[in-house]
Length: 134
Length: 134
Image 1 (cartoon, chains in turn orange, purple):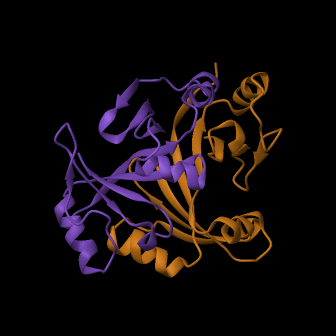
Image 2: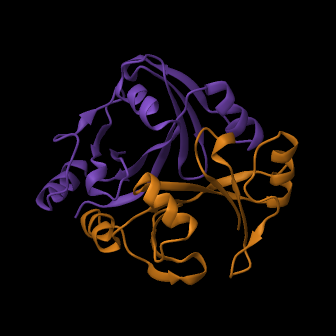
Image 3: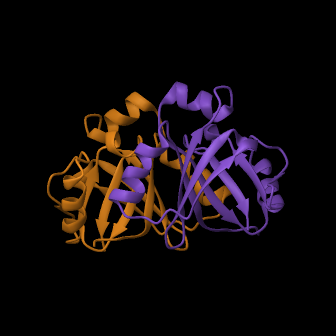
């Protein structure tokens, strides 16, 4: 059986990276590991690792990406919950067999070769869930 | 300096516990550690621990609690992010000194004696952040 191992990260969509870092990095004191432009996602992403799981702040850098539209519609806040899985294909087959609605029918491959896929909030109790094979 | 140690849990507000458990427990296979009525919070809470951090599903059991109103207004989804802190009073003083808006001016004490407090989403980039001293 494929198994969920851990929370990998919680992604927060933000509209002002400097202001958000003033809270997460400066006030809470969480170390900013990296601030990276991710052109493929039309976003700038701040990685703030904690023991076990990470907070990621994602700021759209264009107006017409999916995440930019989400921000315009819903405002800043938690965007998705990423769960580590040991066998993403197995898990996706399991979810399909239960009629769980997936956003990606097949795993996508990130620039670093890792596989991920999103589950639709309709099937999760309103949470955009990312599955991530590490 | 007070320090954030880890993500303790991600709380998800749900409108149908059975349907939500069909995803989180049955489809994803995360073990349900406990399903508990929490009258003080007018909620039923499902605890689904993973390595390091936990997913908590929170279903209002009355219509007039804060979380019931949140659910009615925003629908189901991620509700708050709980961060472990080693010195909650120190952290709250630090936040106050930076004009971070707190929901609780002083830490509250849970039934088990542990201290917690909430930070207003206005100051965090839209996330209701709970500080929790373990």
